[in-house]
Length: 123
Image 1 (tube, one colour):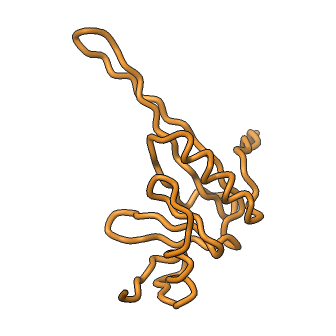
Image 2 (tube, rainbow, N blue to C red):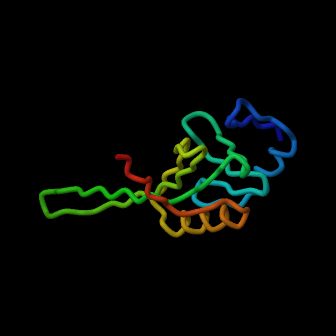
């Protein structure tokens, strides 16, 4: 197989270790959780985020209500959000709640702090 290039946080990453980790990573929907980091498609690129760069990760739920002629329906989207330096820098969206819960648990197993923290109000 040809070597794959990844869009890392500080530029392109194309090492053999990262390629092997991508191939052996656990797949949750289309998010891959490996031993070195997290991988997902972002537009035309495959993003690679190493665990040591992620300060915190959490799930944000987005609800959308659709009103139609015969009633209404709700759709839920689940985003795993990655935080570094107090700022959200990347996220991955899915409609599969269980996959995102399992992926967040797998990320937490690699030492990443998980859960949302409400920012303090500034006066």
